[in-house]
Image 1 (cartoon, rainbow, N blue to C red):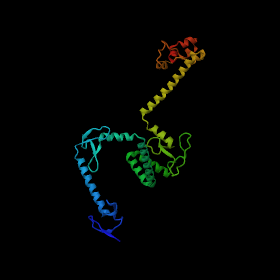
Image 2 (cartoon, helix red, strand yellow):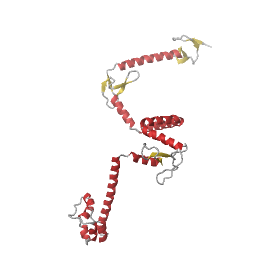
Image 3 (cartoon, rainbow, N blue to C red):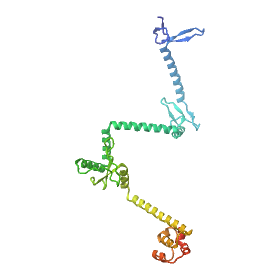
Image 4 (cartoon, rainbow, N blue to C red):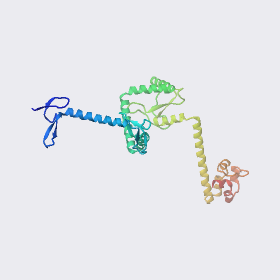
Length: 313
C-alpha cells in the first residue's frame, strides 16, 4: 500500500487513495492526487470563506445608508429604527414598513388560511389527546378555575352532587323540557342531562334537568337582564301590531276592489283610534264606537271615504 504524507497542517502519512486525497487533473492532462488531504483542504476553504464573509459583514455593518428593496425603494439610514438585524448584526435589505406590509399581504392569501387551519386542527388534536390521557388533571384544573371565578356556582354544584349521591335529590331520567325525551348517558358514562338551578345558586336543591340544547336555551333566558326582557317584549308587541296593520291594509285593498260586502266592511274596517294615529291618519272629530259603527247605515262609498280606511289603503 502506497502512503503519502499530507502537505497540510496535519502532516499525516495516509494511504494514497480517493478516500483521503482528491484525484485532480494536472495541466498536462494526467490525473494525479492532491498534495493535501481532504481534512486540510476543507479546513482551508472554510477558513477562507469565513474570512471573506467576515469582510462582507464588516462592510455591511459599516454602511451608513441602505436602499430598501421593497415597494418603497427609498434610501434610509442604516439604523434599528428603519431596518431589522440578522443574528450576525447585518441589516436586512427590506425596511420595517415594507416588511410589515409584506406580512399583511401574506396573511390575506389562501396559503396562509390553509396553514392556519392545519395549525388549528393539529393543536386541537394535541389538546384532545392530552385531555384524554389526563382526565383527572383536567378535572382538577376545571374545579380550581370554577372555584376561583364563580365560587357561588361551585358551592351550589358541590351541594347538588352530595344531595344526588345521598338520595336527597333524584336525577330525572329524561329532559324535563315539555315533551323532550332525551336521556341516558354518553359512551363515556357522562349523563346527557344538565342541572339548571331554577331559583339561582342560593337554592341548590331546586333544580330542573334538561338536555344540552334546552339547557342552553333556559340558561340564556336566565342570564337575560330586565332591560333586555323589556326590549324583547317590546319587539314582540311591535311585531304583533305590524301584523294587525298589514291585515287591515289587505282588507282595505279588498274593500276598494269591491271584494268585501258592506257588512264585512263594517265589521273589519271599524275605526281604531290608536292604530289610526300610528298610521298617521287624522281621526274624525268624534270617533264612533264599534257597536255604533257596525249598526250604522253607512254605504260602501262612505266607508271607503273614511280617513281611517284611507290611511290603511
